[in-house]
Length: 126
Ligand code: HEC
Image 1 (cartoon, protein in one colour):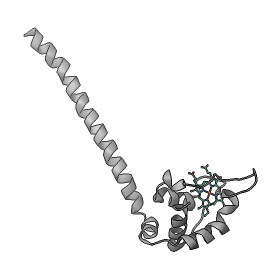
Image 2 (tube, protein in one colour):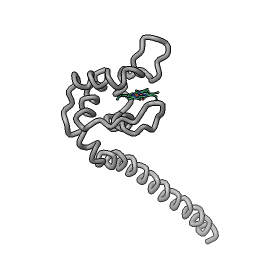
Image 3 (cartoon, helix red, strand yellow):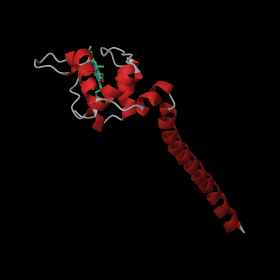
Image 4 (cartoon, helix red, strand yellow):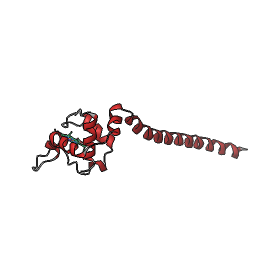
């Protein structure tokens, strides 16, 4: 009798812990699935992503607005090189980087969806 009670007492918290762990894991998985979906529902981002960018136009936009900081032949380059930037930043991250102004001194840009799509197609090529 005594034995049974102790095993029940031990099993119960472990069972609860397992349920909590599974619930927490599920929450994390769902959140990581939902966040990109929510971001894609931003009307600006979804219209950029629905357009086909022209990398030649994108290159011209880049030269005018971005190259001053991101391409430099001297040591005084302000921003990092954007070579292969699309390998560590998703299209949504790149759009946010350009339009949010969250990382000063990089300014906040407000390109039209087509200009942003052009820029994105250029950034994905370099
Ligand atoms: C005034 C200088 C400046 C201008 C102009 C500028 N940037 Fe930046 N940019 C920066 C700096 C500085 C960072 C690094 C910010 C940080 O992470 O703290 C950065 C970061 C970035 C990153 C992230 C790089 C990475 O490796 O994660 C991207 C992408 C980017 N810029 C794109 C652009 C584009 C596209 C334009 C033109 C529309 C632009 N930037 C114009 C200064 C600038």
